[in-house]
Length: 118
Ligand SMILES: [Zn+2]
Ligand SMILES: [Zn+2]
Ligand SMILES: [Zn+2]
Image (tube, rainbow, N blue to C red; front, top):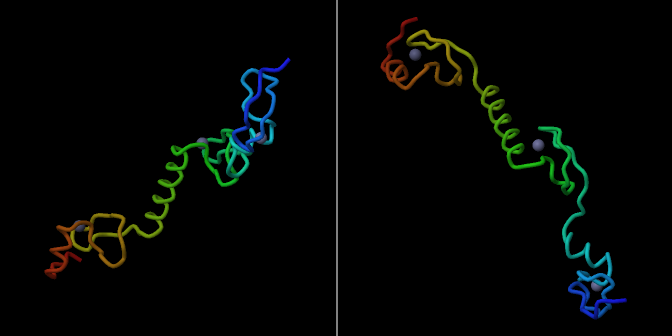
């Protein structure tokens, strides 16, 4: 028995439904509508090591994991570009750039005035 005729929304062919909720003439048309872009595959998130369905390009399972990795990279970058040094004005240890050997804007103004505590 069939459930009447309908038109496939993907290819437009008229076909007889063999299931009540059938919308497409074939599995091929169904998958073409539901997966118009890259095919999905099983990926493993390198951040939380959770399995998830995604395209080849989807590296992380969620925005949350993507952000975590991004923040960590930013931190690493900041640490790499700054060095631990001693403030030329107050003598405090701090992370900064070689170009400005002072820990704060307050010390910077003193430093620029030529005050040097050694
Ligand atoms: Zn079709
Ligand atoms: Zn994840
Ligand atoms: Zn200082």
